[in-house]
Image 1 (cartoon, rainbow, N blue to C red):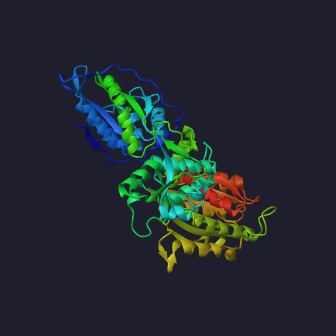
Image 2 (cartoon, rainbow, N blue to C red):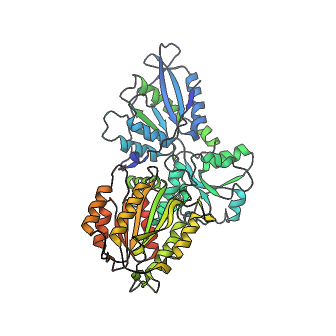
Image 3 (cartoon, rainbow, N blue to C red):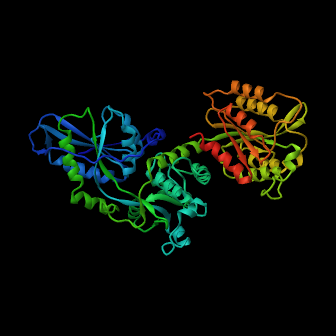
Length: 543
């Protein structure tokens, strides 16, 4: 019998795997013929790691192979099958010097490519040789038939763009642990047009929304049959949908390929050549690889809902380059860290003035109000946000006023949630406008407050907005402020100050110096959407 084990741990350090992954896996394989005989001494364990979707068929093939009493170099060959998620195995192989599998069957060559790129330059790591694809299956949006028919399927297939816009409620697999999730996010990325160098604000906003509803067990979505549980679609393979329907004994779910196309899972057979492998491993691996490519194994895979290897899939796309994959995964990991923001808003007299040419009739204070209303909808309840206002002597003897203390957006506050309280407080900012701009004293006080409340489990930042320059007759000067900020900043406890200059009169030189002292950045904005995008950039920059 094949020895079948499953690893249940999934890791989240995928970012180190995908950075710089650009090249493919080399195609090479040499082996000598294996002996099939009953007389052998000692045992040669042939380790095979397979993605969960193919595990039953590979296990059956291994049992049949072992029953033939194969031998290599006089040793009895025993295939040992282990099931592991492809993302997890791809992460481990680049550093696994002892006991890697001789054969690996991920659900997509994407993982083999990324693992091979991560291995490059590590002379101690195993080498990967891509052999044959065993099967294929397209990524689909799975949905119960009732939902599929409601959106017009099959005559009107769904769009990835409707998923991106939130018009089709969709659950996405975690892209750092599931291929369905990574492929789904990459399709959404292609719709939104992210470049390899940096994520688009639209992608960041989408990942923030999707992150807290993502799952690592997409197979469990087929079993969620409580009333109302299926008011959504979810990313899956066509094979998973077919298998779920087979197990249910009825066509309960639809496998929908969106109009813009999809990616294909190709289930490659990868030879893992290790320096520590025993003599005879190559010939044993070659013979079992032949068994996996046999007509009997292909028939089993087809019966399980897979398409034959290299079957044409209409609309199938090539996976993007390694840098694009790296950008998407890094951004996902960054934006799904919970955040703690202290937002500091200028309410000096000039904030009541219109932005200027091309800026419309709204005042700068109105633009901040609108940005807050839009931006608060982008973040989950577990985000912490606080609001300060500032102008000269706003709350004597201080130039600043804590309008809403920093805390969880979903936390009850004054009979509502903090999210609603922040919306109310932001709507009142235009009525607070008066006086001059106490920029430097406020920047120091806000940064000191954020340092005191630092949460190492979250993305911490101070975001300060102003339309002008420091024009008070008291408080520190720029050089003193910058030096003090630099002394408070701790690289081991990253807390950047991000400064936003609203309109053409903002002192961007001073704002840039204040931000740089803490590892932050300065931005010039002219619309409410620009301000929202700065907050999203704050998250993405943690990547």
